[in-house]
Length: 62
Image (cartoon, rainbow, N blue to C red; front, side, top):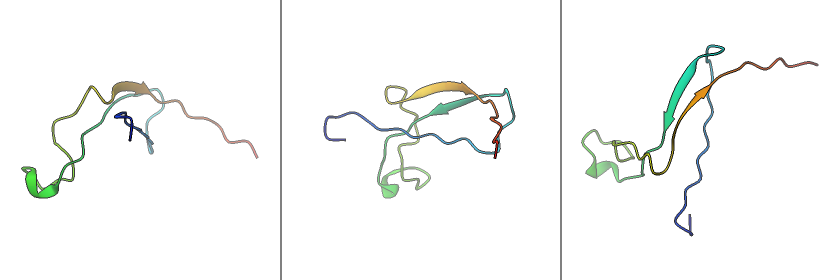
């Protein structure tokens, strides 16, 4: 982002109700420069985002 901050969107699918999932972010990188040719720096960047989240299923009422 222009101001040096980051925007993070996390979507968890097919989760187990009440389970805790650790989520973190990586900095983008050129795949040609990473050990496994991934499009991100393979070391998580906790300064950007690192959090544990617990899932809870919501009922859809129609």
